[in-house]
Length: 513
Image (cartoon, rainbow, N blue to C red; front, side, top):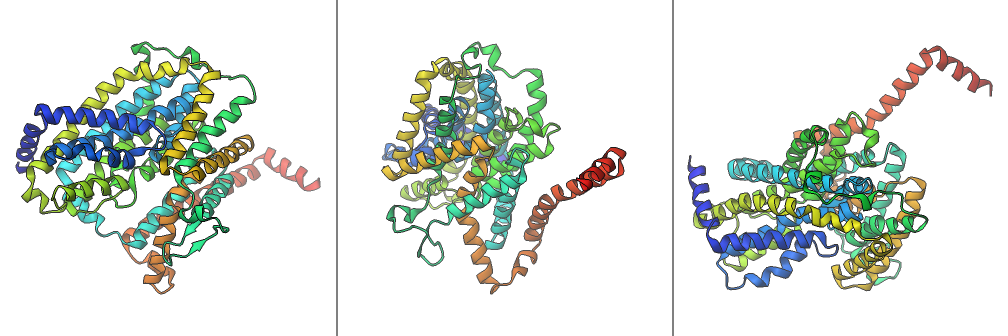
């Protein structure tokens, strides 16, 4: 009952006119920031933090948190409409959402994304309210071996993102891991594979790579011939935005699974919304009765990842508020903001500043309601972008990606990196190689390598450390099952073909040839 009493106190703080105003401003600014490639939640929160100087700390944190979880949806807009992810957690939304837009279903994609985001975000805040201390205590058990096992599992699931060809998926994953090794060695501090170019000391940034692989490659493919899509037929009527019965049937369990996966992963420091969205996409493809539809506009591939990244953003507040441990770049900035106001995130924060903690948590309930109302109402305006003539839209995408890649670090080198990945993405699409594994490998590569090396240093080179703890054993077992399952399936299929008369004849004919 104490939790509900505290939550009621939080709502009494969050619904004051000033706090409501800044909650509205935060989620609106976050939506815009998430939609703009090159900015993203960490940069957006950092840029707008000076606006909070002189504010009450509770009001300031309500606004900054609104920017954070508002940006989780904002990345959906450009991902669906022009195949340019606003930030890393929207990559999988671009894979399926843009294909839906090509079929004239952009409004439905944005609608289901909004509803999934609302359900997952609200559920995530409920869990934050009720069981954050328990979950935070569990997260404390994660050391380098556990984190490596989790990252390794995330990378292996990329086979599910390879469009049915596991070999090509693994090839792209390996290339992504090799690219992630470029730059400073995180353990020794020595430069690697920079080939005398000091610009590569920081490695390949995710954002230029993602915009090139998805945005520029799309423009290059489009330039080859007339656009074969139904974009201009996209309806602007509200009734056509709302998902139909078939869409609900396909999406309802994807939203549930995405919510659970997102919260479970998002609470772990270093995992974040990106891994949550990729993991949710892999889960949906495994559960789907029609996995061949993925990559061609499967609505589950939008509902699951969008639910996961919003649930993960709520989960990320658990270790921040209860342990003082930021689980992502954005929560690290939020932690810095708290310390700037003289606050110390951690267990004592609930006792010393209950008005801030519970006011912030209550504002997240309110912010999710504002987001769903605002974004459902604005979907027709978003879809109107698709009525722009292709001769105008494609140059705008190029300008958008050029400005976005430069503004991320104010570095012209990132523009060249983006163009290089764009050309590579064009040839990958022509020959059927999936770009998503490269993107995730770039995001997870450095952390995977660092946790692997830290684990081996702890065990003095023994691989037994990855099979010594229950959490690690569980994660590694799941990974091995995912690796072995396709091989077992191929062997069983071959055995069935050999038992059938047609299979035997086919085998005999092949042998004679």
